[in-house]
Image (cartoon, rainbow, N blue to C red; front, side, top):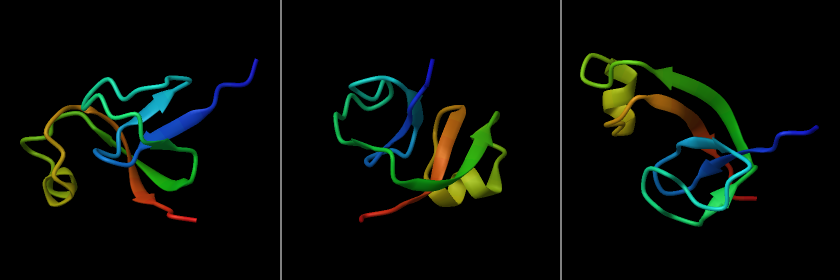
Length: 66
C-alpha cells in the first residue's frame, strides 16, 4: 500500500490520500513540496509564527510550483 502525501497550496498542511484540505477546505493540493515542519504548539513556535501557522500539525516548508 502506497500512501501519497500532498501539501495544501493554501495553508501548507500535509495530508495523506485526501481530496480536500481538512484545515482550510481547499482542493488545491500538490505532491511537489520539500521539507516538513511539525508544529506542536503554534503559539510558542518561532518558525511556525513566521510561516503563519495557527494550528498544530505537519506542514510543508516549501511548495514547488513546477
